[in-house]
Length: 68
Image 1 (cartoon, rainbow, N blue to C red):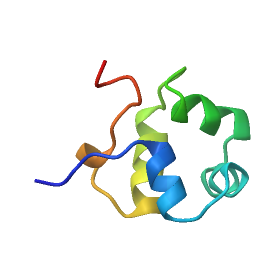
Image 2: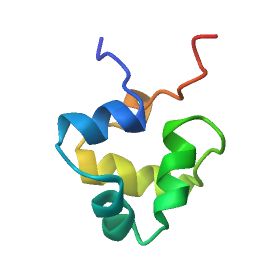
Image 3: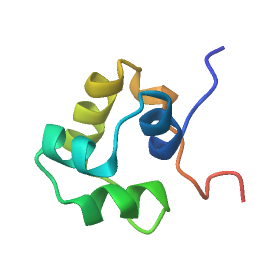
Image 4: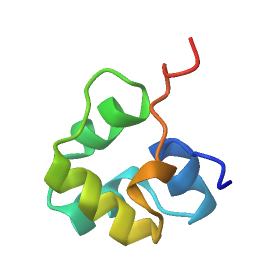
C-alpha cells in the first residue's frame, strides 16, 4: 500500500516552491497555500494536474486535516 502524502509533503519532497507549483498548474500561490493547509480543496481538474506534476496516483494525495 502506498502511503498518502499531502500536497505540502509532495512539494517539499520535489524541492519545489509554492510559486513553482502554482506556475506549473496555472493557479495562484494563495491557492497552493490553501490546499497545503487544508483551507480549501482543489477541483478534480487541479487534483489530476497535481498528481501528474508529482507523478502520483489520485489515491496517493491526502488532505492535511484528514487525520483529525
